[in-house]
Every structure is written in C-alpha cells, then in structure tokens.
Image 1 (tube, rainbow, N blue to C red):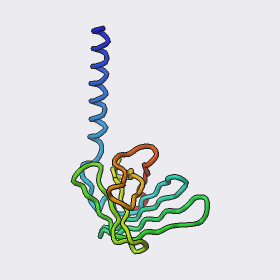
Image 2 (image 1 turned 180 degrees about the vertical axis):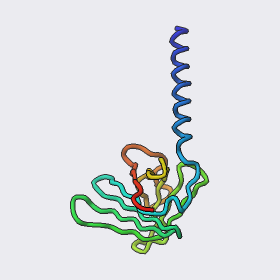
Image 3 (image 1 turned 45 degrees about the vertical axis):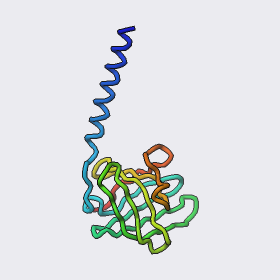
Image 4 (image 1 turned 135 degrees about the vertical axis):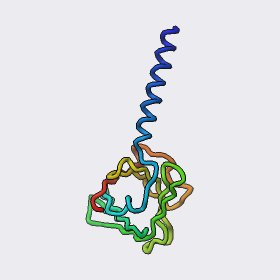
Length: 141
C-alpha cells in the first residue's frame, strides 16, 4: 500500500511541475500594440474576425458559415490585465445598446483564446472549456 501512495504522490508532483511549466509559457502581460491587428478563427459554424487598432478601437465580425450573413460590432476594446485570464470587453458598440464581454488568454504572440461573448458581464464565462472557447490566430500586424 505504501508503494501505491508513493507512486500517486510522485505522479501528482510531476503533474504539478508540468502544469507550472505550461503556465509559465503564457505571456504575463499583454500590450495593446501586441494585440493590434486582425485575428481570425471559427466557432460554432461561424467565422470570427476581430480587428483591434492600437488606439483601442475594434471591430468584431461574426459570419455564419451556413449562409452569407455577417454581424458586425464596432466599438472600443477594454482589457483588464490585473488577473489572468484577462477580462475583455467591447464597449460603446455602434450597432447595439449593450457591450460584449469575454475572457482572453494569449497562448503565444500569434494565438489567443477567448470565451464566447456575453451581453452581461456577470453572465460571461468564468473559465475556458471545449464548448465556449474561440481560438483566434493573428493575420496582420
């Protein structure tokens, strides 16, 4: 029985070290200039394009892959970098009366993951999972 306990604690230690190594590879800060550009990905039969300018303005386009319909949201991006994952909001949207909220986590300089957008800050996703995660890749600087 002691051998089993030693094996389990060893495996837990290895998993903890592996997790810390993975987390240390995630950039700890995120500047607006690093985010500036066009980010593209797909989510639930939709193509997602997020354009962020260095002055904080952004455009979110959601195109339905089943038809030619494209929804566009133009507003001001706000990123709260006080904790990870970062809180990401699009405020003052021209096309709606409400903001959009998400979580953002950079995986590297060319890839970010975001949660599905919510119209209410308190109802936004609090963690990433396979059902709510959007992977966006940077196309331009």
